[in-house]
Image (cartoon, rainbow, N blue to C red):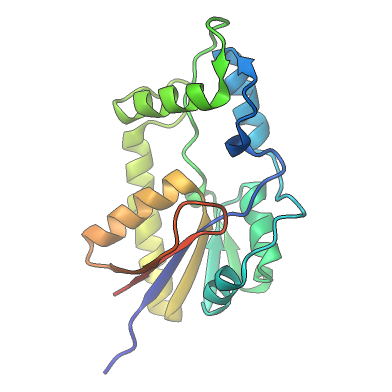
Length: 193
């Protein structure tokens, strides 16, 4: 009997610039673009410590790969996996589209919901289209499958939306979800084949 191949898809820890905080400040669409640009450069918050279950899931893998965005790289370091990791821009988050309008003013959360819904139906100005993101997710899934065949188990430390697209692609290929801990920081999904 052969050992099941395993892929663990984990979301990064809480970054210094936490977009989920939603402080209620109203901003223009152009300002949203500036915030998104800053978010792409932010590191992991030093107080964001991986929970034991996430540490166990990550350290149970023979190899890891992560996005090249600072919040992902510093999350790999927090997990103590830098020596068995590959850093790859293929696993970056799909950049949120936006417009450079100065009106109206809404909260970041409201803009994010509006722009992501628009993204789902094809809007991609200043970002990656959903079509491009799905193509990239297929390439990322190819690579994860190859890594799992080579190492038995692999961790992908990535981002919410891109992880969802990769998981969807892996499920289409016959991978089964065995564990799913949610959508929050340090959450993970374990898939087997």
